[in-house]
Image (cartoon, rainbow, N blue to C red; front, side, top):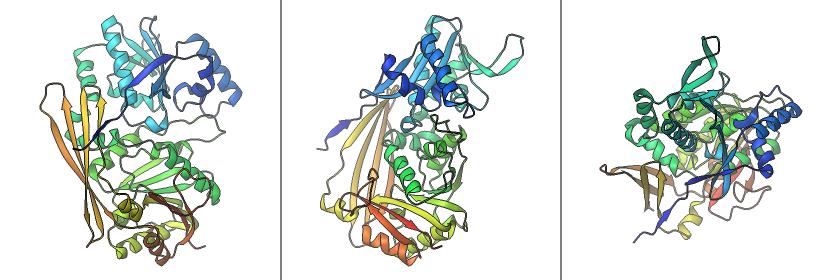
Length: 429
C-alpha cells in the first residue's frame, strides 16, 4: 500500500503588526509604492504612510509568510490596495485564490471593488482575468490606472473559469504539475551565487534550457536578467509563456535595477543554434538527463558551448542516479487541495538497466465536488547518469568543468556525494 502524504498549501491570513514592516516593505511587486527610480528613503516613507493608513494581512502557509493582502473593506466601493505573493509562490494559484475570496465577500456585501494600478503593473493581467475592467475616473473618462469589479453574470462566469483551471484541457497538465512543484528559492539563489562567483555581468543575457512551467523565469528577471528560455513540451511552454507575459515583478529595493525581459521559445537542444549570444546558460532540473544517449548529450553540450560567449558560464543540476539507485524507493503519493478541487499525484518508477533509463510516471487525479474524476499521466525519462558521465559529456564538448557542489544551497565547492549533481563549467575564451 502506497503511503499518502497531504501537501499543506492551505493558506491563512493574520493581521500584520510592526514586526512585519520590513518584510512587507521588501516583498516583491506588492507594496512597492514606487518604481525603481524612487530612492530607498522615499520608498520607505511612502510605505510607512500606507502601513499606518491601510489594513494589512500577512498570508501564511505552514506558518511561513508567503504574501500580503491589503483591502479597505469599509470603503464603498471596496478598495483593493495590494495583493502580493513571494516569487517562490507565484504561478501556483495562490494570488488567484486570495482575490477569489475577496471578490466572493464583496459580492455578499453587494459592493464593487476598485484597484489603482499603473498600466505596466503585472498584477493587472491577473485582475483582468478575474473580471476587472478599466473604470472611469472622476472626469468620466476611462482611467488607465483604475480597475473596477462588480458582481454580474459576466464576472461570475469569468471568476469560475479562473478558479477552475482543471476544466480547461489546454491548461490542465501544466496546472496539475505546477501544484506539486517545490519552491524555486534554492535554484534562484544558486544562479545568483554562480553568476557572482564566476564574474558574470550584473545584468546578463541568460539562456534557460527546459524551463518547464516557467517558475524560475520571473524571479531571475527580477534580478534584471534578460532571459531566453526553451521548452519542447507544448503545454508547459504555453504555461511558461503565459507566466512570462504578465511581466517580471519589480523586486525589492536594491538599486537602480530594472526588470529584465523574458522570451519563451519552442524546442530543446536540437533547436538551439545561437552563437556567442549568452553570458550564462542554465540547465537545471535534470535537463541534460532527459537526453538519453551519450552522443546526444555531447551534441547538446556543444550547442550550449557555442551559444555561450567566450568565458561564459554554464550551471548544471540534475539527479545523481547512482546515489538514487542505491537509496531507491517508490515515491509516495501526495494530495493537494485547490479551491474546489482535490488533486492527487501518484508517481511510479520503472528502471531499464539495459538501456540505462529510469522512466518516471505521474498519474494526476482531479476530483471536483460531485463531478466525475478526471485523470491523466505524465511520463518523463531520465538517463542513469552521475557526475562522471555528465562531466565527460561537457569535456568532450569543449567545456571546462570548474567546480562541483553538494546541492543548490551550497556556498562553496564540494564533492558530489548526495542525491543531486550540481556543477559549473565555462566556455573557452
